[in-house]
Length: 62
Image (cartoon, rainbow, N blue to C red; front, side):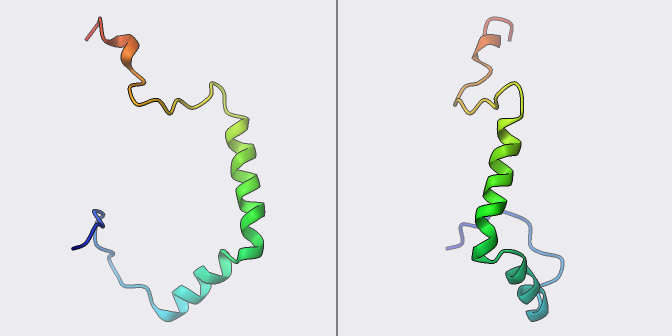
């Protein structure tokens, strides 16, 4: 049973593609990438809303 619900790729990844992708995301770079993403998210205003029912305040109008 497959849990993947996305579209099928237009072309399969080749070995060279996998090697390049592997080089982009080496373990030693992941900390730097994570810090960059965290810094970017911290600068966003207003803070992203991760609540389950974020539009509840519109309930009376809908």
